[in-house]
Amino acid sequence: MSRRLDAVRMIKGTRRRRLHDLEWNTLPNGALVPHDGTPALVLDSELIKWTERGYQNRRPHPTHGQAGVITPPSILAILRAGYRAQIDEAAVSR
Image (cartoon, rainbow, N blue to C red; front, top):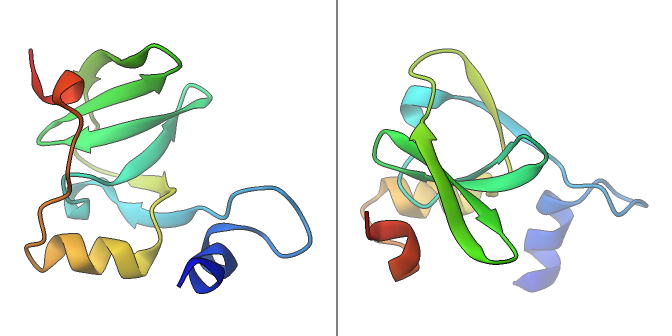
């Protein structure tokens, strides 16, 4: 499974992430997107940046346009089907 996901996550022959362009309004909770050079978690209508100190800097995410999504399409499909991602308490607490 890990090898298959890596084939979707990474650009072959590099160490660069493959981003999947999707509409902001289609992203489920638990999706990760790059924001200001770091990954950010989509949670309801917000983005919460991941830092070495944990989740920080909560802000509204765009409501239209496209996002470059880090999370592989197969995982997004699972989240859209109703699977609830385990999200760190630091991201959930306000």
